[in-house]
Structure formats: structure tokens, C-alpha cells
Amino acid sequence: MQEKILYGPFTQLLTMDKLPQRGAMKDDQLEVLSDMCILVSEGLVLAIDKLEVLSGQADQYVSFDEPTVALPGFIDSHTHICFGGSRAMDYAMRNAGQSYLEIASSGGGIWDTVTATRACSQKELADKTAERAARHLAEGVTTIEVKSGYGLSVEQELKMLRAIKDAQKETAADLISTCLAAHVKPKDFEGDHQAYLELISTNLFPLLKEENLANRVDIFVEEGAFGQEVAKVYLEKAQSLGFDITIHADQFHIGGSALAIKVGAKSADYLEVSGSEEITKLAKSEVISTALPGASIGLGCAFTPARAILDQGGQLAIASDWNPGSAPMGDLLLQASILGTFQKLSNTEVLAGITVRAAKALGLQDRGILKPGFKADFLVFTTSQYNEILYQQGKMKPANVIKNGKVVKL
Image 1 (cartoon, rainbow, N blue to C red):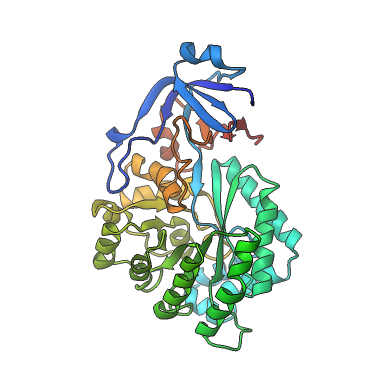
Image 2: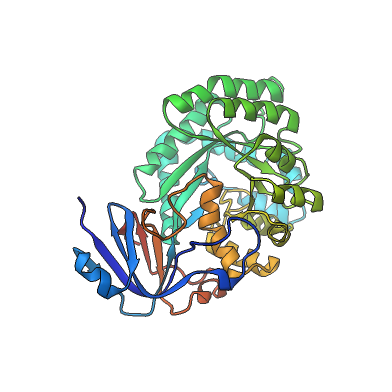
């Protein structure tokens, strides 16, 4: 049995426990414990209690000289950090007035990254992914969803997903792979959209299971990507094989969120153009609405209507969408803080969106909360008041990151 390590006491400890699973939340609903310690062993939380109660049970004691706030490790439920190349020219073109779809049609956009990613070896992609994961981890993100989607062929998608699996060996963060082979129809595929999706579902899906490369399948439902009808067939095939599904939905045009509800997706991500009808239907469903403020910032477009989603009783997660095109910043805490400002979210709603509700978006039931039996993934901020974390809008980073009960070297 591994040694028992005691951390604390913390000036404030946010458990993120006992919160409603859906709908709006006030800050007085947040459980904030004072002068508590966390006892961990074998990667799990054993107990949360006062120092005098737990000190005799520990083999090692980690204390802090300054006031501290502890809370669960952040969970980023939507990223594209496995990629090659740069899209700096896209950024310049957008700021010069061209739209996302105009840039894509002129040779930039996703296909630019596909070309650069295909040119990378599996090792190069694994190294790049691990490097980005290390930065995310240092900023407090202990669980990172990572999509493929820049290969767009059976062979190249396999290379990406194998690289993500290899990158897991090089980072303490948990990497959750998602197959996004249905990002767009590749330019070098001669058939139509339906034929491409049939090729992927027939030839790639079985290999994902065989090599344990991904348990999640995503698709971009949008003009210029995939329509609802062909996407539905594709997603139902994925479900029949045991994959969880998620959808890039309502980013530029509505329709994706309705499909997410119809097929029972884990989440519908983006939702920037979702209107009142879409919001109402999402709020009544079990689909997690995932806001991606990094894309809104990167594209200069409206934010996901997070306030309306919560007020209607919906479930809101917040993710970075870290990708080379629309969201190159990749700073989850900063983006979540800004979303909270523009959408008037309580601090509890923001923090839940990057912890407990983000865990639910990924179907993970063992993290996002600090309590016995859950993963010992937590962050330590040098402050006496948790409100300072979001008040600093991403400038306050964690002083310590504890992953699986061990301090990560930052």
C-alpha cells in the first residue's frame, strides 16, 4: 500500500460537492470549508478533516506557509492540442475582415492544419501534444480531452490517436482521446460526405476499439462540414459500437444541437448561435452544453449564451477549445473568467463549469469533486479568498498542482 500523504491545512477548501447537477447556482451554494486538510493515498482522497484528526494517520505531511485555497483540478473537456503547424496567417486574415468560412475556402482553415499534421511523424505529434499538455497541467488542468481530426484518413487519424496515446506516457495529466475524423470531408477524398463517413465508420471504428485508442466520437455539424442527416447515421453507428458521442454544434448555423438531443450525445459544444428555441430544448435534455469562450475570443464572435442556458435549467461546462485556428490561446482559467464577466455567471457557475460539470461532459464520475473515494487531483492557490482566483482573470495560477495525490513539478 502506498504511503498516506496529508496536505494542508487550507485557509479555504472548495469541494465542489453538493451542488445541483443542472441550472443556475448562487455563490452561497458553494461548500467552502475552513482550515481543513486532505489525506490521500493511492491516488485517491481518503478523508477531509481537521489537522488534529488526520495528522496521526499520515506517513508524510505537506504544509503551506502562506494562506491557501484548494479546489479540484480543472477539467478541459474540449481541446485539439494534437496538431502540427501554425495558423498565424488565419488570425491576420480574420482581423483584416475575412470570415472563418472565407478563410477555409481560400486554402486556410482546417485543411491548412491537416496538411501540416500529416507531414508530422507520430513521435513529433506525441511530443507536441505532451508539451502542450504539460503547459495545461502547470496551469491547473489535470484532465484534458484531446481530439484527432487533422488527419482525415484512416491511416492519418490512427497516427494522431496513437500519438495521443503515446503522449499520455509523457505527462501526468489524464488525456481523454476523442475521434474527430468527421471534422470536415477531406479535399483529397473523391466521394461525397456520406461515402467518407461510411469509410471511417467501417474501417476506422473497429481499430479504435481493437487498439483502445478512443471511446468517444465527435462530428462537426455545420455548413461546409457535415449535414444533420449523414451525421445522424454516422453517430448512430458509433453508438451501436459502444462509443460515447459528442457534437460540434450551432457554431455558425443552428441544427447541431437538435441532432445532439435526438441522438443522446454527451455534449453539444460551441452553441454560439443557439437561439431561444435551441436553448430551451437543450435545457430540458440530458445533453451538456459546453461553452468554448476561447473560440469566441479567437474569432471575435458572440459567446455561448451561458446565462440563458443555466437560467433555463441547463447543464453548462466550459472548455478551452485549444486549437491552432480559432482558439490558439489555450488558457482555460482566463477564458472561463472572461466568459463569466460577459455572461454574468456566478463564480460557482464558472468553477463548476471547469470541474464537476466538465467531468460530467466527459462521462467521468471519479473527479471534479473533492471527497473520499474521488481522484486526488487538486490545486493550491496562494490566497486566502477563493474569489481572487477569478477576479485576477487568469493571471493567478496555481502555486501547486497535485495529480493522483502527488505534487507535480511545475
